[in-house]
Image (cartoon, rainbow over all chains, first blue to last red; front, side, top):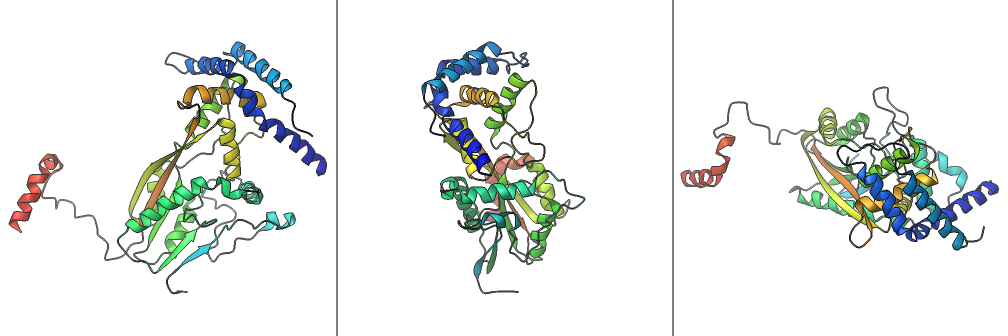
Length: 74
Length: 290
């Protein structure tokens, strides 16, 4: 029981820092968002990995931001 | 059993802090109206009610449950407005699903026939039922963002936002349950959040996480990141916050009584809709002739 709670606690603390890391990646997030939004225009079609390049940029920026700020104690 | 004027509070009072965890799953509904615990063969089994109960209990046990009450408070006050709008006195009222007393119905999206029939049965003739529930546009921003992100990241999507009753269905449900003189009107409350993640935290705090049976167990972190980016890009306000729309349907249904106005006989019309533009003339003519 308590082991689950420890895991859940870590997951939640990681999730809690989510908005902060995302805020550090404004341009990358906007680029990805624009790419997805563009596919919703008439004539567009959203398929898997259509915006993979933009997402990769966002993901690496996010990971870098997460590394910089140390997560709270376990 | 009639009591003197007063407001009865029944059902779903959230647990007080300090209730031992073992009792949570077995909390009884303390009321005289026995809502169907299982499902009738006719109604659709869309929601895992046990899970919803657990979500509500969890939310009530969190350190600051009142923090997430803002939506219920607002809807509760709008319902109270509608009560006051009715030019009648009622000696007795039943507040169903009152929680902490918002005078909001339990915001239960799974409105089965049986619940409405029960309510209609319990009413006295010429009694009225006023309810509120989430409408189809609720959280459309969240729904769309998740859908788009999941499609782009994973190639498909599954529902993360519960299905809501359509407004037409609501009228039918109320009519089938025997209510007379129905009105359904709709209202939108927009709440701004710093971001998608904070919105989801609040929904969880309200006990409103998805509990439909066909929910996906996991929301991948990548997908959540993608959805947050899409949400912000597509919907953000000027000040950088993101909006979430809560559409509320308010329904009012009356239990039949002889004194109530009835639709006029077919063919008894004396003016046609085409003359609507001249309504001012028509009304002054009528006043003169009286």
